[in-house]
Image 1 (cartoon, each protein chain N blue to C red):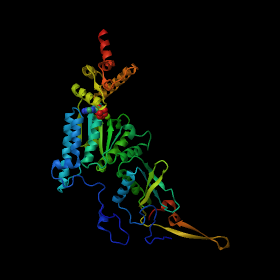
Image 2 (cartoon, rainbow over the protein chains, first blue to last red):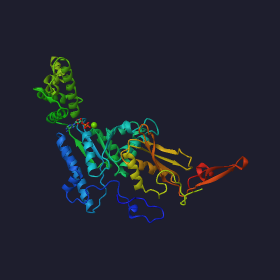
Image 3 (tube, rainbow over the protein chains, first blue to last red):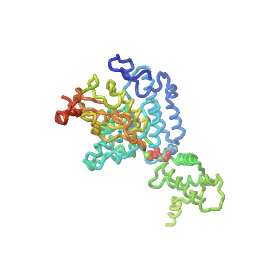
Image 4 (cartoon, rainbow over the protein chains, first blue to last red):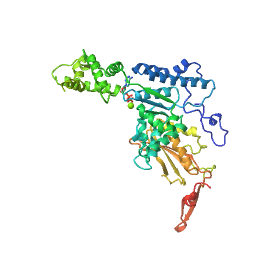
Length: 323
Length: 146
Ligand SMILES: Nc1ncnc2c1ncn2[C@@H]1O[C@H](COP(=O)(O)OP(=O)(O)O)[C@@H](O)[C@H]1O
Ligand SMILES: [Mg+2]
């Protein structure tokens, strides 16, 4: 920083005191090409990571690229002095549970931060209970406290439609929505709001809250995963935790997925995570039962076919034909 | 009894300097946040040097990542009490410290009432002194500007 920002009373103020520097240096200063912006801000690296780490989700990735493209071009325009209104960045992520909405929101926060659209890049994830109070006068302070924590980053509101309860006209959720709307409009530079939830319920929510719809610039659809995607996700999850499928286990897991997909309460990648969690438990108790055996690294990292086939999903299926 | 020629209350940090601009306040708040301090906003109509506890404007703000939250609260306080003294305080909750680490005035009445020195004569021509806030000469609901 060049010189102090203050001046001693009685002296002529220095040039610096008239115009203090912004809290954060502008990113990608002087860049003239898309590549330069991506490189200087390292937003490109995050987008590549998103591409690589997340299985499937082709339409989502395409949308994220579109949004990033808009922001990068905006940066370039700014560098040439072509000002534009600061873009509205509030988004809605709709899709079934476990389709990666929270995961992508986290990456989105990083991308927005790298490109300089939010100052800190953290994500605050909340639900109705974090915003709405129990009695009169409780909601506004609660919502404002959350908003203050989210400033500089992304506020992620999961199952946002629960904020609106038409059956109770005195529901405090409406108050939270109004405060949100105000901040989304007036403090665009301070935070980005992402609403998440089921597609149909979000649609109903927007229909009864046109103010909210009009402030959301980007709607992103998260499709359900195909079985092949889920298998790949399982491989990734296992690798991350230093496990792998033993002989026959992968094929068993494919079968598992086929059955599980048709059952109710299927939650996409989250169900995969939970299934693997349970398989790890079974592996551990299998090894635990054999107390004298010397365990090799291979023993400790292998999920066997039996660990998968012991799942309730297979038992139910086996029991069903007998009925 | 203003002992400084500018006729301004000098309490806390930076109080001999011209008022901080909002951009400068943001820099201070960011510094405090980087140290993990919790900021709070307080106001009073009587900046008597012995008036340690001002009124709290909302709760202290824990777990903030960015100064914008503090500035939002400050803007609301200024709108409510434009002619009061307002200060920002940073609380360091580190075990063993647990006290105010930073404090500075961010809003003043347009005319600062100042203080007077009161001399009270006691027995044997003994003189006792005390500082009197002119602000308190008026009823509470009439203080804070004209
Ligand atoms: N495309 C993907 N590739 C790898 N893991 C994924 C993918 N999508 C989701 N997951 C994993 O699935 C779990 C649930 O995802 P999450 O983002 O919480 O879903 P949602 O918020 O839509 O319910 C997380 O543990 C996440 O890491
Ligand atoms: Mg989620």
